[in-house]
Amino acid sequence: MPSVFAYQSSEVDWCEPNFQYSQLVAEFYNTFSNVTFFIFGPLMTFLMRPYIQQRSRYLYVLFVLFTVTGLFSMYFHMTLSFLGQMLDEIAILWLLASGYSIWLPRCYFPAFLGQNRSRYSSLIIIISLVSTFLSFLRPTINAYALNAIGLHIIYIVVQEYKKTKNKELQHLIEVSTLIWALAFTSWISDRLLCSFWQWINFSYLHSIWHVLISFTFPYGMVILALVDSAYEMPNKTLKVRYWPRDTWPMGLPYVEMGDDHKSC
Image 1 (cartoon, rainbow, N blue to C red):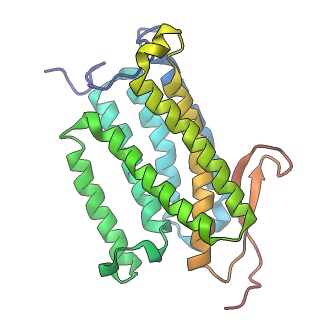
Image 2: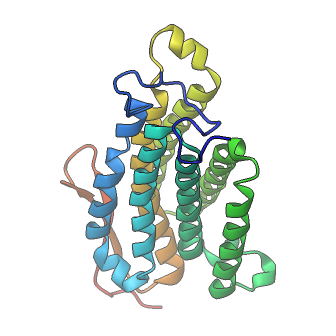
């Protein structure tokens, strides 16, 4: 039985040819396309710092997990090891769990929790611990299960899109949904249509997934922050800004805390 640290000990292998450019890197483009996580994670932590300090310092954990996800994904695609796969997928699982715990509006809580966020967060931790254990039983289906969680997040975002009259929030949801749809199409195409992409000598869709999903997460974080503020911070005004400049057609969104001028 191969060691969990060994190269290619994972049952999961993506479409990109292995060891094409180096004997040390199994999937070259899939490995180095994760660099955007290392850029966006620390940058978003800095840009969102005023919001984090007023909303919840646990959000620092979420941004750290976002960066760590890129690190573990890089390790997995470099080695295709079982350990790398599990670290990558478990980091994504706990990243999603952190976002659910902090930002999911209380109106979506299970009825038996009575809109109690402490109980809800405890439930999410228990589910995440059980899911972490289960992920070792059938590792080949983990990625599909994680994408199913993404579909639920899209459902929540669509419900909030229908409720809101905030044009800025609607725009963010439209852009992020488009980017996510392109990312998911890249991911599923790489899994299901690999022979076609290899036939036309373009088997790098999973690396495109990495880049697109790394853009989707910052957009999703800002969307959830805006939705959450309407429920949890009604006396605060959040202003959407874009890095590096607001006037650029495409940028990294973040929120600034405005003056407390609303009344209950």
